[in-house]
Structure formats: C-alpha cells, structure tokens
Length: 238
Length: 388
Image (cartoon, rainbow over all chains, first blue to last red; front, side, top):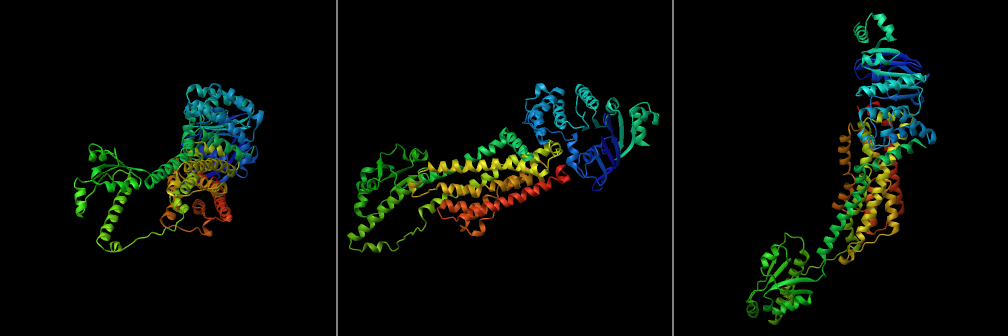
C-alpha cells in the first residue's frame, strides 16, 4: 500500500512536482501516466526517500519515508530511472550483492536469487559478465535486483523503455503475477497503450499535478472519450 | 555480514577483474625499481674508478715511457682500429689515443707534444673511461713538467702555485641517500596511485554507470557504503605500497653500491618503521580520492582532478631535493611531509625517533577519518547523488 499526499518538490526556480496525491492499493497495478517532464520520476524519488519533498508526505505500508527512509525502503522494491549494472560482475553476482545489502544470507539468499533468475528466465546468461547484456537482459537483472528482498510494494519507473515487444510482453506477465500475489504494484509510463493494457488503476499526471485518476472505464466515462489517448488529451488540456 | 564489508568485498572483486585497476596496482611497483636499478647501475659504471681501462693507441712505440706510466695506472694498451675516427664515431671503441710520429724527437728537445684523444662525448657510455684517461695524461704531463724544472735546478713547488683539496664531509651513507632520494618518492606515489582507479570507479564511475541510485535505495547507511568503498581502495593502495617498497629494496640489493663507496643498509626495524608511517597514508590518499571523485561531475572530471593530485606526494621530495631540510618534529604529523621526512632519514641511516613514526601514522589516519566523514555527508546530498 502506497500513499502519496500533497507532495511538492522544487529544484531552485523549477517546480518539478507541484501537488501530487495518489494511492496505490495492494493487489492492484496502478499506472502513473504522464508526458515526459510531468514529474513522475521526481514523485517516485520522493517515494523512495532519495529526494526530500518541500511539502507533503509519502507512506509505504504506513511508514513515513520522509521521516524514516530506510524503514520504508525495506518494504519497497524500486526499479529506478537509473538502472546500471556492474559490468564485470555476472547477472547472479549483481543480484546477490543487493541481496547481501538487504541483510540476506545463506540458503535464503541463494534460493531467492535462483528463484528470481528462474522467474525472469535469466538462466542462460546468469553466470555471464553483465558487460555484453542486451537491453532486455539488463532490465531483467535490474528488476531481479530490485525485488531480491521480496518486497510487498513494487515500484517501476518507465520499465518498458528501450524494450522490444517480446520483452514487454514478458514484463506484463511478470507484473500481473506480482499483483496476483497480493502486492502493491505501481509503475510509471508515458505510453498510453502500456498503461491501458496493464493497469487496474490509472493516475494521470501533468505539469506536476494529478489531473485525473480512477479505472480506465471510469476515466473514459467521465470524459466521454473512446480511448486512453483521448482521455489523456481531454484531462491534460482542460 | 556488515554492510560495509559487503560493499568492500564487492568493490575488491570488481576491481580485481578490472585490467585498469589491476595495472595501477601491479605495474607501478615495477616502474620504480627498474628506474632506480637502471639509474644506479649507470652511475656505478660511470664512477667506476678502479676498473680496467682498455686504451687503443696509435703510434704506441714512439712513447715507451708514457705507455709504461699508463700500464702502471691500470690501463691496458691495445692495438688501434683501422680507422680510429670512424671507430669512435660508430661507438666501437670509446676513445683512441694518437701519439704523433715526432713525439720522441720533440720530447728530447723539451718541446711541447700534442697527444690527440679521439672521443665522442655525445655518447654517455665510456664517459668514465674518457675522464680517467684524460686525468692520467694530465697527471703525466704535470709530473714531466715538474721533473724538467727540477732538472734545471728550479724548485718544483714553483710549478704548483695552488693546491685544491676537497674535504668531503658527507658519509658514504649520505652520498648514497642522494641516489636513494627516489625511493621515498616512489613509496609515497604508490600510496596515491594504487587505489586511485578503484576510488574513481566506485564513486564517479558508479554514478556514471547509473548504479549509484539503485545502490542508495538499499536500506543501508551511506556511511557504511562510503566506508566499504574507501577500505577497498585502501587495500589496493596499501598493497601497492608494500609491493613498491619490497621490490625497490630487492632491486637495490642487486646494485653494486659498495663499488662506488656507498654504503646502504636497511634493517627489518627500518622497514617496519616505514610501513607504520606510510600505510596510514594509504588510508588518507584513497579517502581524499573518494571525496574528490564524488564531488566531480563525471568519471573524466574525477580522473583529471586525481591525476593532478598525484603531484602532491612528489612536492616534499622536490623541496627536500632543492633545499635539503632537516626533519623537524612538527613535520611528522603532517601527511605526506611527515612520511617523506621519516623515509629520507631512515634511508640516510640517521636516527629517527620512534614517536616520529607514531605521529606520522596518527596524522594520516586522522585526516583519513575526517575525509571519509565528509564524503559520507556528501553522499546524503541530493545534488551529489543525482550528479547535479
């Protein structure tokens, strides 16, 4: 369960996020939809405690991340905008390193890493150095790394960027699986079809503000639009 | 497992697989000893006074007395090459002495004789032989002149109005220290170079790769993360220092220092003292490098700053070289300067107070801890993490 309320963040004179509030419940996939520069990444960085907001709060399972970022992070698996791997470590070592940093050891760590490699179909490249990985392989390792501690809340910032069709389909299946396990899944995207195909709940952000939210059907009904694209144009320009 | 150790171990594994990081640790210790060995070997060769000199002579039969004098001074007379000028030019022989045909005649008449010494001063090899033979010929001429004065009833002392006597107050060990001044500089450089690549790659490199933000999303204190990265760079730096010191001493032991009247001896206690004084510099230098690389906007910028920083350990060496300073107690706790003072004195064979090593260790360690604390604070800054 993720709750963001009244978050505002400025960088000098630039207002990155003006006033953002939304909820992402457990067992649902929530999409944060907005054009580039709308403030999605900044909002997610506030949520992960990387940035301290000028106003407002963010809570993960009732933990205030502004007051206690580490307690919040322990309950959060975040795939950030920056998703670099260590090129000289293998896929397995990249994932293991993060598991160790989350305090996992022994059989629990070993089994969890093996499970994620299996789940994300990383087997063939698991013990190869990450230096020659394709975009899709890199993305999968970055996701495994973010989920190594089995977090109840999963947040992904533009996870489909740079992926091919097959990788995107695999990712959709994976996210649906996380939702069906009862987790709170939140992801940001600027691609309407993406959000439309996957999300149970949609939050539309424009110029640092939430301009609409609800299920796709509810949004279409409210705006009288036929597609998500029309919904977006309607709410972003009104 | 403590988070700092997890970070440190990962950085070490990562760097050990990185050719550039390994090269900075393993190649530098080789460069120093090679340079020292080559320099010292050339110097010993050039200064070698008692070595046999082979002297090709043209017209040897014309001057039997001169030849006898030269042979008595340890010179071996050999037949001249076909074309003396060309042989010297091509470096086949270092020098050729030419005795003119009318030598004996002019000698009898008491006229000056011209002896030609064919040399090529642009070649450094054989410089010792050239100096030696010229000095011997001058000495012979002078002796002959004095004998001639004596034969005409003139006091030979009139012919030597000035006598120059050099009083050399430096001990053999001090003279050796002039050559060995290179050693402290190499050991200090090792502390800066050994962990430099790792420190850059683990900070500026981490951010440029886009793995810093994921790393900081882990619920681990930023102090632990900086601590791990710093200690990994420290391990590389310390290993480089130990390798450099060990290999340089090994190289020195193969150089015939005694042949040029230089005595150099370094005991186990000295080596331990040097390590106690210099290894803490392996804490301070990587700490400064981590801090600077975090501050830099990019990997390239970090490398630029850190390459400039490599000049820092050479400064005291240059200062000590230009104007030899006596080590003062206040110098010991000053990082780099203290290490340089201690190393120079240890190598010169001068007594070093035990507290000197302790103060040098304390000074460098204190600086290291301050720098690491500042780096950990910087890693909490949004601007530093996001790369501004």
